Length: 447
Image 1 (cartoon, rainbow, N blue to C red):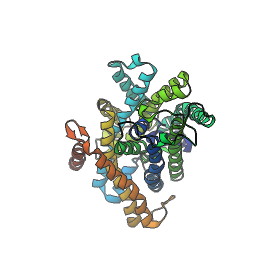
Image 2: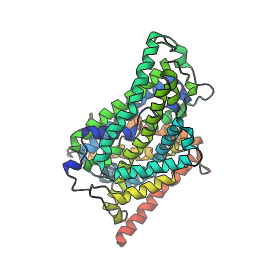
Image 3: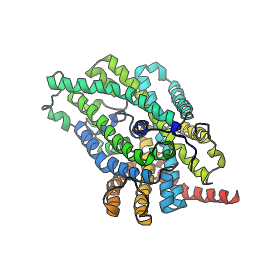
Image 4: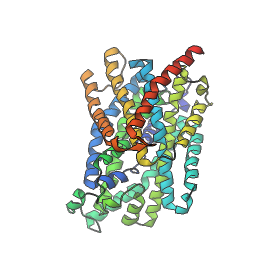
């Protein structure tokens, strides 16, 4: 894998936490559809329980494998070592295929909130040009290296969450003093009330899972992190707590402020800020939404572009993908991935989530299997951080995420993409993996 990263070019703990936060969350943006689909009470329940059965087990798994095998390429290297080259390639293929749909979401979020600031800016084809600008600007930022992305994520984190600190404080204060809110001890009907005729609990679960997924993404830049054996477990657990906290508190504040759940859909945080505080905070929240889309795309670009690089290092992709800048960035991979993500910008938000969950879920299952197999296959492997409970502990942490992945598959049964059922479309993508592996091996032998 990658070599030659000096300490001055590597991310320290705080930038790693911030980058991980953006790879997973990027703030409360994206929760609107959970509230709109399920109502406040169910949304808060989901946001409180899902981290326990999804985020915590996954972050524990990532903490062990990233500290034991801190290699450039991350999850691809874990699965390859545990299960062999074929399954390692499938892990990489599923992750990169999922990235096509995942990465198209964030420029859409950027454009949505930019339109809330000034509708004329995104009218007509202007929205598409803004989305393409996000792709280009993030590619340029990424060429500065992982350290630049991580340190930039710290600043973006502070800017993004500042309006929500104000919104949460004012919403809770108004509730406590009884100004326009429902009160801490009153208004029980608001918590239990369904959001009109749009109740979609299965859809709310899927959006919740999407808002809590991506814990493994930071692993692909392990060679670009200071003391990865020590810092990855700390970053995973700290980021998990930050994500849950920054989801639950703002949601509870707007609920206590008395804003009806049926008003929430993508982009509605600006309306909530206007109603609870005023027009000036609404504009700040809208600006934060653009930071959300940009920051998540930027951090995830750093993560995903290391996977084709790792495959090229193994000879499974053209060697040109191993070309790097002076900062150690695989620039050919950055360019090619950016083009692929730009081509997927036209898909709708709901379709993107359903496909993303199916493909990402398959990759995550392979990572949990790798955790268990390595416990048996390499018991003497040095593990600076270890999931407690021995082999059965490794099995136990996989149960919750696998059950939720199964639920996501069931929930996506009615979605359609390009005239096909979403599951059928995802199945075609999955089936292409073995064929691509055979072709990649043939090319490697020929070269």
